[in-house]
Image (cartoon, rainbow, N blue to C red):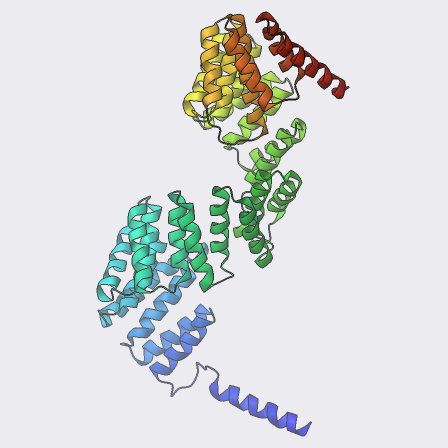
Length: 493
């Protein structure tokens, strides 16, 4: 016990001797500066400022104290409640430059401070001066790339970030940034390659994991995307965006229950407000899952919540309008479709929904106009073409009907899902009916055959083809089709 007391006494003496103190009269400017750096590194910026101020009092020309005191004020000024600190930071850093005009770091700090104030002109000026003094200082290139990226000039952003990597290839953020720029340009493989490099330098770099996951998702490699989003959640269980993105990937792989679980977590994860991501989007995507399952009332509940959070969420109004349409609440569907179009005149689905509602009211001209507008906004909107085919068929305009069924068939969808396959099958079948009505038997048979290939379990398809085979005196084929239709009807009972 005595040995322990002696040991603790020695430790206490060591701390007394070596702990930073601010009240020793004989302390030099260099010592005050060293103590200021100690507190700066511990992010105790107010205490650091006091130490740097004492250093300056001892030596009014102590350049490093002005520079780092200025950067301490910058750190405090990042707090929205303390923005005035940024102006104090500028004064101090400018004084440090006056004392040492060749200080690259001071120029960079000054650029960062102006950058924080959104004074882009001055930020660029001082970042440029930093690289003129030291052409191998990477952070000036990195921050300059951020400015160009935010201005939408990806070419310049990439040039700057490439320079940063060239002069110092060991900063994970530089690889992350370049990968992000590639992602924005749709070069997802390049984005993944850069995030891999960032993760070699820091395997727990959440931003790189998120960006790599998003890149995999953009390439429809959802299994890999899920792995990355899961790693993010393992590092930070309160990361809302990771749940949201993983939910999207689960949805794309048909795991709707897992998707709903993740959307629920994205909606409720609020441990850090800065990470509370996409609550409106999470509610929206949950609604889409319910909508696709035919649970329209539950879908509406989710879209309501999305709209409560974001009253300008055009997609949510459009999707809620579709749910109302499916529940035969046409007036509410009209209201939502009109609101979606008001918020976003390029909302293709809203025009499609409103066109269906006009069709139910027998306002054919308005119906057609909305379908055409939907297809004009989104040329891959095959549902609009299919619906135009139906409308013209019902109106007796067979040539126009054939034209739009054909467009529906030839249109490559955004999502090659079950809904598309069902509508593609219907387009062949309905076009076959029109061809049959026009007396074009061979074309009709070809379309019925294509419909059967896409869905071999519909007895009506075989019945229609059987009738045409009988007309053509192809008795064996007709009998085979009738037999198949009977077989399928027995199975369905």
